[in-house]
Image 1 (cartoon, rainbow, N blue to C red):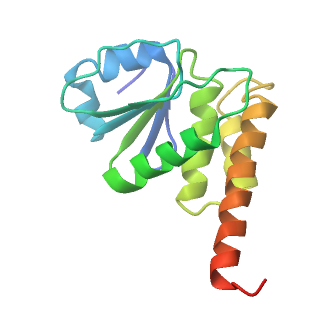
Image 2 (image 1 turned 30 degrees about the vertical axis):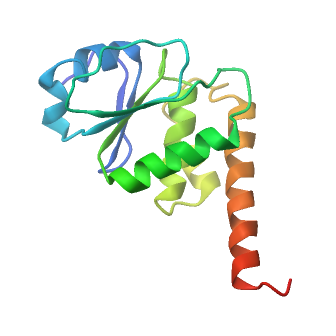
Length: 155
């Protein structure tokens, strides 16, 4: 199906786009063509009337700020607990949603820097912004430190 707006498929479970895509895709039955069952909107400034069949998580993330680790905790839990095919969108589809795709690809097992390079191919040269990358990278570092302490409590 050809799209005249931002729509990317990054894995069997991860789709990404902008607010226009959200309106054309997840406000109608077109999301069913891709098996999408959940939506993450990492943007405080986007209001979309999602289809009632979809699980939805909205996170108040700003384009030019770091991401609160609690929001990443919520996003990870939403993704892991629902086991759903996820469509991620923000307003323009080039910064917050792209950064969150890198986050989810890393949760799926891809090395973070590889995921970041992959998503950067689908956006403008300066996006996603460094603050978002740093927030996500720091979250994974804390997760790894916590796991290391759990596996080796003597350290």
